[in-house]
Image (cartoon, helix red, strand yellow):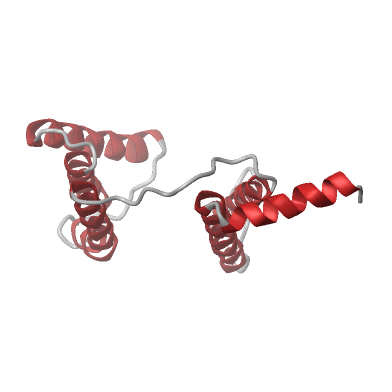
Length: 172
């Protein structure tokens, strides 16, 4: 290792201590690397099938591999110091409230809405709430876009792909 290379990696390591964005990207990359490796391992017991006749394990396998590769790229890019750096501006005031509302919506969405209302209605309601809270659009615009998204989602999966998504307890 040349003297310049050793000096550059020393500066890069020192920079991580004083660079929360790069450190956050490394930690985020490591967390998602673990998640995607776990996802891949969980799908290993499922039948992969063939390209002509895919089995239920094919998608988790490809998602796990792709997600792990992307996570590794994020980690390497951050370690090499080529990613965005600087201070992290955490949300405050109205922005913090929006983040907390959105996080609560996601929890309710996954835990309650899909099994109860089904994928189609839950997706439309989620889109309405997301557009209203995060996009700060009017209620009318949010409802129109959410309903259109629900219809498009239903048509795309049911008609184009021939896949029926979970309908929930309300719709048979």
